Image (tube, rainbow, N blue to C red; front, side, top):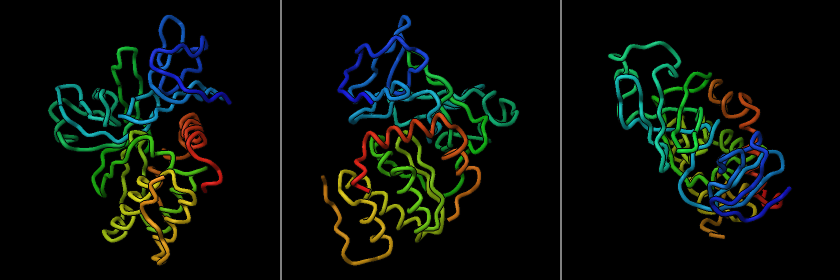
Amino acid sequence: MNKKLVIPGQFLSSDVKNAGSGTYIDDGKVYSLLYGILNDKKRINVLPFSGKYIPSRNDLVIGTVIVVTPSNWIFELGSAYDGLLHVSEFPRRIESAQMKGVMSVGDSAIIRIKDVNPAMKVEITMRERGLRVIKDGRVIEIMPTKVPRLIGHSGSMISMLKKETNCEIFVGQNGRVWINGKDNDMDRLGEAIDMISRNSNASGLTDMVFKFLRNESDVEDDVDTNTVSEDVEDIQTDDVEEVSEDTSRKVDMLLDPEDE
């Protein structure tokens, strides 16, 4: 696997069919959209070091409605680029007059990035199982670069969090995390997610978080270096092979196996 530092506008490949996240295509060639690390093991991806989320085709994210027009909802994605959901991409047929009743300004939803053109026009869809308006629970925000750490190798961290807190969890690739459960359980889960975010470079982080959730006394924080609903579990793991593979590659790039 080729891992090297790349900068925005740097030529990466002529294989446009394998262009992945953090890239763009111009004149039949693939270029880096970001300052970050190149991973071209299977697809051509660039993982950013830091900064805001950059929308990429097929990403699963959590967005918040900021504008409702006669035929579109416009979503804020935690990015410099907003997303457009046309009424035809909603799961069921609705009339223009019904749109604000279905989703209004301030509402959040689990959505998928359908397409991103070279001008960074972001199109969204909800016409897949599990994509839906969020009506309960809480949404927590972390840095998008921390998402692989929250998921863990092969989903190890997120699976442990679900089991130990009895909460539903969906992790958006834009760094927004939806959790749902009893208030006390969500409080504990929120603290655990904050611990993961602040200590993402720590060795033995999974064990540290496990001890915290079990209320064991020898947990050291601030190192600085279970049943999930069927629909949400489907889109988080098995629904789209390409997305899960992309997430796994991002995890492998960021994590040292010894950290787990």
